[in-house]
Image (tube, rainbow, N blue to C red):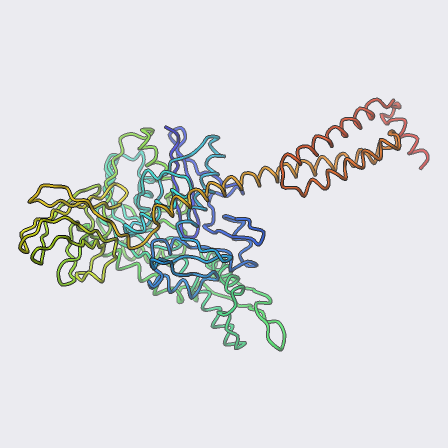
Length: 618
């Protein structure tokens, strides 16, 4: 079995880790960074940029640069989360035929899974370069409060990238794995995970290699992106008050504001104030306008105070569900880049009555935990047992639009549970089973996961049929459902009507497109490398020709110039064979010149006689 990499597929940044020699190592990207921005850009030339390069061109190409798609994955277009994203994003968000949120870039519609797949593909390539071998399997982390649809969508993104996702694990659980590996003492640990797009809090008990999640809570619509947005809105209001210009209508300005807000937030983690300077942010009849303001840490904390307070209730709920109090916790681990803010440290200390630990890197620990879980699956890591839980209840819609739970939240997974239902109408031959996830007692208040139609029920009075519905949740927290009519004892076939997500045909098509794109990327990389080699060779050969060209006959000099001119034309070619042919011709010319140079007699000072005579003439 090959290496299984661990991937933290974050809203703002991603990180890849692998287990090597019993130790976890962070995989650097091609720019040398330990994390990769979760940004994908599309250029006018049809090129696809990922990571730092995409982020760098976002200001000048805002409409064709997409980011924070993790907040859209598995979401409906009309959901509140997507509505907020439509108001603040520089790129266009549209609805698909089944109501899912999609992204429109350069007249093509992409699913969030496809964009995530592009990012995963780049991370996969970085891991292969690092390891020197092919990578086909991965452990991918998701927020603990991701529902079944979002988990399925994440697996689909992995398929599109050419990765088999062996396991999906919750981000707080992965962080605890990285922290607790090798520790033998018993500890109760809180993981407070405030990343770019989501917030999770989990209570775990670690005891001699057994990692048991006692409870989890969170908010999949709260994260560092919201903190950035508050600063950006403050900047918009300040600018409008001074100039009467509303920057919300300018996509380019919105992107510049987003980047400035993120930079200011990061600086305020270590500084008490920061200067925000955006020249030429807009213009009117009187000329260009600039934004120059100072934001203090106190001012920032006033802007985001209510966001921080939104993390308090999930923390209290997690403690309550685990039947613990703050004083029962041995350690509080902070995960996610947003936890670097001093206001988060103070809030966590107030909630749990203890200073949070600084033992782990909040940006890398989740990927490291995922890599450890990969090591568990390959038996490279032994004596570790992970007992995770289901974050939200699963059940079905029953008569009157009520929600009947089949599996309660905070149940340890994997697990299987069965409930028996019956018909409500005489001679009913089929039953529609509506699968839901959530905590509301009314069905419409919960998340619809899909509808299954059970057919072939024997005719009879209502209540006679006994339909045994079995819910099975695997270790990744993904649900499968089966049904059996007990009176006949026959297993009934289910016709599944997905309420969202990509169809198998769509996934297959996107997998093929992603593979083609990967081949194109590889060819582009090859062509760029060949061009660079040819251009370097041409520079050296021109220099030698200028210095020793008088040793050639006029016909030879003319032929050499022709060779270099032809090579110059080939540097614009996209055909690697043409570039290789030109390179061989220039190498042959260079060898000829080198032979002439070496055969020149030298004077005692080490110069050739030709050089000496030219020098004396001068």
